[in-house]
Amino acid sequence: QYQGLFGRSTNEVLQLYSAHGQQQTLQRNSVVTQLHRAIQRLKQDLKSLHSFALELSKDFQHQCKTYLYQVLTVVQRLQLQNEAMQSKAHRSCISDIGNIRVHCRIRPLLPFDTAAGHTVPQDRQRNISEKVAYAADDETVLVKCNRPGHTSINKTFQFERVYSASESQDTVFADVAPLLTSLLDGYNVCIMAYGQTGSGKTYTMLGPQLEKNPAFFTEDESELGIIPRATQEVFRLISEKPPGSYWVEVSVVEVYNNEIFDLLAKDSCGRVYGVKRDVVTTREGKSDVPLLTYETVENASEFLHLVKKGLQLRVRNPTLVHAHSSRSHLVVTLTITTTVYGDNFGISWEDELTSQKLNKEVSCTVPQKIRENKSTFSSRASSPASSETTEKLKQIKARLQLVDLAGSECVGMSGVTGTALRETSFINRSLAALADVLAAIAEQRSHVPYRNSKLTHLLQDAVGGDAKLLVILCISPDQKYLAESMQSLGFGTRARQVQRGQVKKKNLSVPSKAK
Ligand code: ADP
Ligand code: MG
Image (tube, helix red, strand yellow):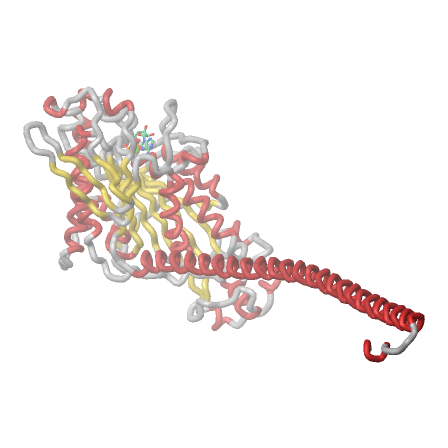
């Protein structure tokens, strides 16, 4: 370039320089413009990157939520499956094992534990309560055996379930409820409370008695015992079945001084009074009480009304251990009856032909009340049904026996004399007979001495293996009742070991309404 300027005039050189400068300015301007555009594009890219990142994060959050929800759903489903499996296992455990289930309930220390000082022999008298029986865990009872002058020994007893003093009526009933499902499935069920007077048998079976009238029980729902709760649950379960497919009867019996009293029998004026009945063995080898009053009931309150009526007749003679001690065994029986088609128990009640067959047969077997139930036994009852099909219909009964046993304390301990002593000795004999029966079954002896006592004869089918039997041991935790508590715990331990073979199921199942 400079060589090209050689020999040119200054003017020409200046012109050339100026042209060159302009060109450079132009070039620079275009570079700046390009840079500006690139910056704009970058900014644009950055913006879209930013919004993309935002969208991505939103999307990520959404997906996280979806996955979390899916995981939660799966976890919930697994939990439900697990619970269902557990309750199924629990039920099959109750249904398949013929063993007697034993639960143990330790009541709290109560004011009368100290007040009743004169009811125990001199050497056992104490003015302060001392708790010696505890629930070590929900299957173990721990008893501190501390006699003066001896080193203290701790003894433990295992049961299917142990309730501590703080466990509620609700908790106790939760373990009983599966048995009621079994009842509707066709098993006989028997629940009995065993323990010394004042240990909580009546509290557990019925609920706290009213001070003014011991035949009446609390109205407080949370305090209700097994009998009212079980009745409500049975009627709730029945309500899930086709209407009219089951009906319920109640009987209330007392075993007092080795005599059986029908607490629902009425005199000619309709007043309830206790009539003596007998217990017999039927040709099928079952125990039966001929002429026993069975009242048909349609709901839990009708049922409980009859139980209360019966309770008012219950023979009582307060011992010094506890003012409202019951000196008799109380057996409340709830019988469920249904009619099923002989060979095919899995029938659907909606099935046209079956309904016709049932309508015909049921109309001559069920009580008037049930027959009037139009929703079940509809106008189809008049439709022709062939006579040979009706022969296969069967009426099936399952029984729930709820037993509040009399106190198991030792004779001489309760400070009783005369009539009361006679009662106590009858009670002890009947409870000893119960223990003998269990021992005979446990040893698989050919002869089981059911007939040694009216109590065991009456409960023969429940104790002997035809029913699912739950014994609830009731324990007073105080030191002064140690001997009685140990006796009850021993009874429960032996009862648990009794192998009765398979519990039989009656084919009672009617498909439930909800499909
Ligand atoms: P039992 O029928 O064995 O003779 P009760 O059921 O009458 O004994 O109980 C005696 C007393 O103890 C009653 O006043 C009852 O209310 C009370 N009681 C029993 N068990 C409990 C418990 N788990 N919690 C509170 N009070 C109880
Ligand atoms: Mg009682």
